Picture 1 (spheres, rainbow, N blue to C red):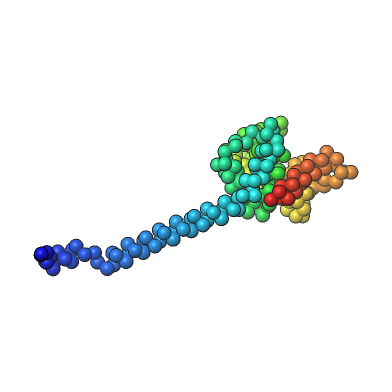
Picture 2 (cartoon, rainbow, N blue to C red):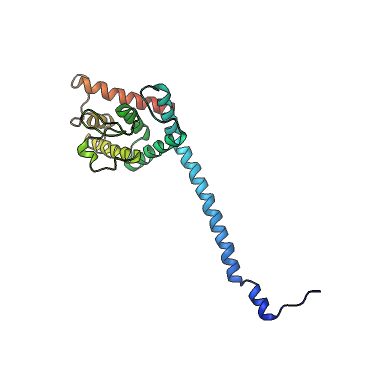
Length: 198
């Protein structure tokens, strides 16, 4: 036989309806947030897949040239940097990958003969305005410079790549600039190869 609780104790033991509703609501919010976070992560993985595949392809095709770490985490970090910069500046991320591979063999800490820095080999005068300590900052800085070069060349991607490489001209015809023509052609062919592999 159970003894009935005093009415005051019964009110104290039973949670008020408001508390129960808040508890259930918070559980629904947490579950929904987790669901959308998982969905977003999966979507991001799908978006990064072609970039990660391109990085793996480049790493496999030139293992002696490319000391990129073989870890999946590092490839995803780089792919994220290329994708974010591409989205931010309206540039195909695979073009950024092709430029980074051509410029630095995907090495973050490399410094060129004229003081160019990082993955995208940004000139020191421009690098001073960027976060060059991280791969993400280096890619963002290079993408900003490439976007500026493309715009100065009237939206011509080849001209923008030529201006990015030379720092002076959008013209990269074989008869006018044979050395620059070879440099730009190589980068454009690599970009096409990565797009086809995608």
